[in-house]
Image (cartoon, rainbow, N blue to C red; front, side, top):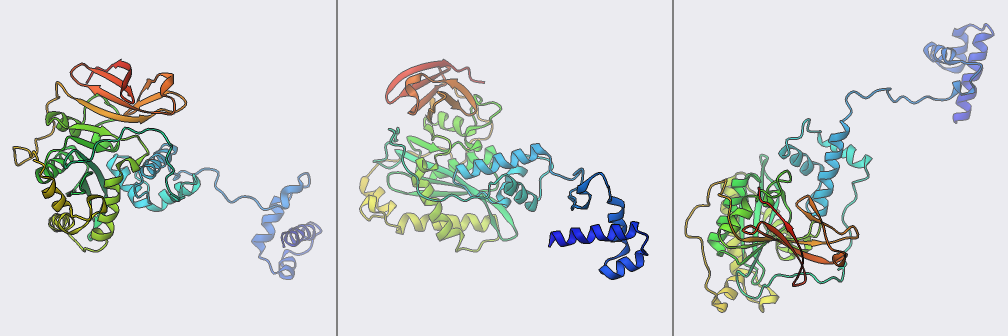
Length: 389
């Protein structure tokens, strides 16, 4: 077909230069005069390519999304994907708005960026363990360890955007659900504190590396609001390794349950209604759902049978942000050390000893001593000065 079209162009131009009337040429070929003059203009006897089709792509693209915005879209998408979160165009756009990125690309533009960078694949298959020893936290008694995660953004009819802080006792699966209007510092404090008012204060609190949990990548030593809250209340805060959401497996499984049995089934149109329905679902879960790991009991029945005395906050309202900087206490980060022997502490890099290569380590930040202590299994193998800011 292309060969026939090229032959038609060659013959039309030859007939034109042989002096034939353009009107007759166009009539015999079923073409317009503009088509004929286009190829007459392009004719170049010294260049055999003049008869070929040319790209219609513009020489410049003044409205193309800036390269730095495309890079941010890529990073946001990979971050959401690695955490096991929803990572569609709408969620990415809301994340960009939260980050105050300007200009915010449209949903269709975000889709084109993802296709260009081949980032439209979905997670498949099951996780295959690395076979490395992981520092698991104890979860034999109520409130030994809570796993906490932020779900969202999700949307009510309207649309109204919200987040949910889900906390689960890893021993008996008792849960607390706290809707949040945003991931602002005070919202995080209010949500965690409200969960403690109902569940009690845990010995250990395990979270992922969500920005709202640790503070600021610009000031990684500044101790974010959750770190300060835990230190003030004597809670051991643990951050799981980046890109390993299964380490928070109890709350991650609960998140699926929360989505399927609650969000997908209950229609809500306001934050007040969401709070009311969330508390109702929380109570229904804790009082009626049965788990094999606690011998078929409900979370509340398991709590009653264990007769564990719980400790609750003394005040009815969360402290206000910003909290005073703690002067003592520790918080913990579990990290997997790869071939480069680099230890990542909220974006700040430290050199780890060679024996930690391909091993899980625990980095303990001692606020009083202003030190970062590195442990392999239970043995301290390195220590760094860590001046808090």
